[in-house]
Image (cartoon, rainbow, N blue to C red; front, top):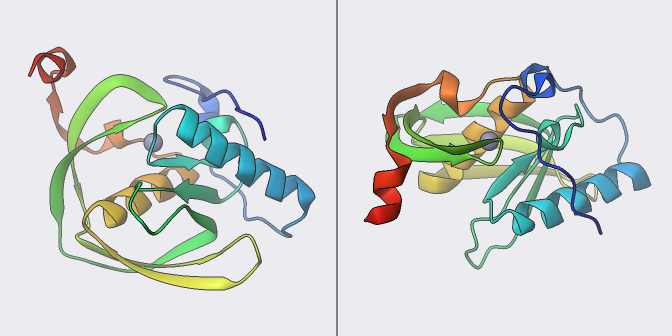
Length: 158
Ligand code: ZN
């Protein structure tokens, strides 16, 4: 278990395309465990491997509901439907919040840590998180998609 450094802002690694995971070995398992620890340390609901400087197609999500942490290895979004418009942020872009339009529904296939192919159908926050984290694997940040920035100082005062 280890906390890894979250890459931020103009770090070029955030703009690169991640590569598929060929084999779930001990190194990948350690990386995923570290990503989960790091997500919790930073109070995030999701974290993608490039955010800790590793260009592998992996992200983790935990919405702090009763379903637990989910691990997505080599995820493929196979269906999207509708739109949702909500405010979001990103651990790699501190102190910025903005409104982003995401799919209302996402169907995704991904491997878990045991190598099983899982299929998830997601709506609301989970659909948003999957869309956001999957973008990281393609070097896309939420600031590329913001339709309106939210004043963070005003949010804190409320
Ligand atoms: Zn992010």
